[in-house]
Amino acid sequence: MTRTVYVNGDYLPEAEAKVSIFDRAFLMGDGVYEVTSVLGGKLIDFDGHVARLQRSCDELVLVNPHDRDAWLAIHRELVARNGIDEGMIYLQVTRGAPGDRDFVWPDPATCPPTVVLFTQSKPGLADNPAAKVGMKVIAIDDQRWARRDIKTTQLLFPSWGKMMAKKAGADDAWMVEDGVVTEGTSNNAYIVKGNRIITRQLSNAILHGITRAAVLRFAREAQMEVEERPFTVAEAQEADEAFVTSASTFVMPVVEIDGVALGGGKPGSVVARLREIYLDEMRKAAI
Image 1 (cartoon, rainbow, N blue to C red):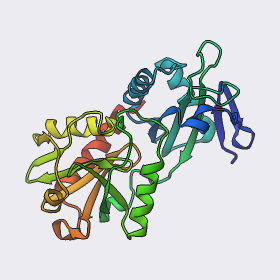
Image 2 (image 1 turned 60 degrees about the horizontal axis):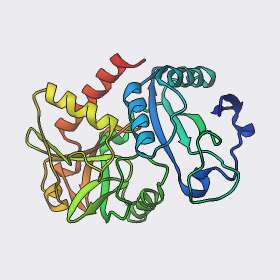
Image 3 (image 1 turned 180 degrees about the horizontal axis):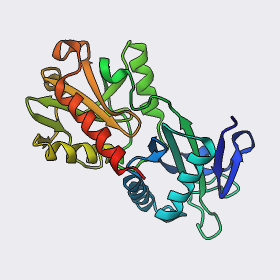
C-alpha cells in the first residue's frame, strides 16, 4: 500500500510529496517536531504532544498553524488512510521557505510555516522484545546546544551519539555534562534504587518528555518514591535498575552501562511494572 502523507494542507502519496529546497528546516534546522505513538489505532498522550509543540513554537517565535482540534483531525485522517494499528505519527513545523537563504528570520505574514506529517507502521510496538532483554548504553560527552528543552529538528549530535553506541556494540548512549547524566540520545534517563526512581529535574538541559511526565505520575500513584536530581554514571552503575522513556519505546529497561551490568544483566521488576502500568493507562486514555 502506498503511504499517504500530509504536506501543507494536502494528503498525498509519499512519492508526490515535495518541500522547497529553501525551507529553513533544510537549510538551518529551523523547525520543531513531535512523534505521537498509535496503539490499537488510537493516539497515545496526544494532548501532551500538542501542548509541547505549542511550547516549542513559542520558544522559537514560530507560528503554530493549527489548534488542537485541527491537529487531531489530521492525525486521525492519517491513521485511517494508512491503516495504522500500531506505529507512530511524525509531525514537523518549520519557519517556512522564504525563497532564498538568509540568517534573518522571514516575516511570518509573507512566509507561512511548512507543515509535514507522515506515519510509520510498527506492528508489535507495544510488545517490543527489547523490553524483555533490556538495552546496553555507553556514556558520551554531551555536545549539543544549550536549549534541549525545545524539540527542534537539530538532531545531528544525537544521531552521532547513536552511531557511537552502535560502533561500541551498545544500543544507545547516555550523554554526560559536568560529570552528570543529562539524557539519552532520544529519551529521558532514570535509575532505580530500592523503591526510589531517580531522574534529572526539568530544565533547559533536557527535553521535557511527555512519556516522562506520565511515567512519573503513574509511579507516584503506585506509591513509588520519585527523586528529581542529577546522577553520575558511577551512581548509575551501582543502581538496582535503570531505564529510559520515550514516545516510541515507552518504558525500556537498561541492563548495562559502559560495560557494567545491572541486576545480573536482566531487566528488573520495578521497570517491568512501570512499563505495564504505563501501557495499561495509556491504552485507556488513548483517543
